[in-house]
Length: 234
Ligand SMILES: *Cc1c(COP(=O)(O)O)cnc(C)c1O
Image (cartoon, rainbow, N blue to C red; front, side):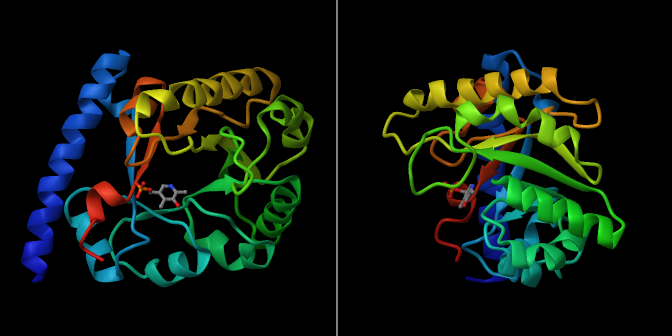
């Protein structure tokens, strides 16, 4: 496939996705600007990833820190999102490159990010990952532990908690993901009441190819899309 063909396909797919996000916003009674698309580029190379900023998509995501390091060389005003598990020994190298860590999934990791952010003299924005579907293979805080995190969060001075991230279990009928997304929204709202103002807790990262429209209807502010954009382009 030539670069022009890739570009044309991506343009068409983005237009369709944009229409679907807009329609879901209308159904949910939300303004279109309330939702940001994060294009998860893990299945494509840096060449394909580099087309996205040219098409107006400035938020790019990777699930593996090493891939993010490699692709962060992509030129343009790109904001990189880490959406997968971050090992503590990869924190130092990741912090300077990342706009938002979606996957803060333990107190030990939060402590390491706080310490490293202080060493590097920077502030770091994170989302707390919640294992909302309770699948044992997934990372994240169990839902019932989220309200009790407030005192820990209030002790952080370099880390800003922007919101929560979660995934629904795969369902043939995405409508069945709705309770998981509603739970994430409720947990975010409850936690926001308990934490200091420096943690905005305004964001909800939820919704992937299979279920993003339901997630938007339920309040997603960041949708993380891979397959619907990149299938066949890897
Ligand atoms: C791969 C990945 C996505 C994108 O998933 P698709 O179903 O391909 O859209 C979103 N979030 C995370 C954490 C991922 O690892």
